[in-house]
Image (cartoon, rainbow, N blue to C red; front, side):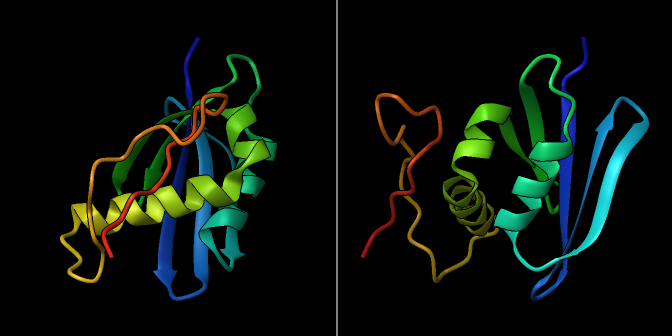
Length: 116
């Protein structure tokens, strides 16, 4: 069974597009979301539920494989993590980049740690 892929692109501030694919087949897509959280929520609702997991690509960078349940329950936290990881990978000087650890014992979503 293939893991579905959620791919999210930011075209300009407050203009995002996402699509879900499995292999070379695109299942759903949407243009016009205003933020990353809305993209994650919309895509997670439409994603195939067979194996309960999806890979996430943000602006052409792999952001990990995540449980659909976690995305549906806490898309905002995952959006912050993805934005932070993207900024760190692109050497954004305004972001303090430290090791990212799990946020809570019951959550599989990471916490964001940054320097002050």
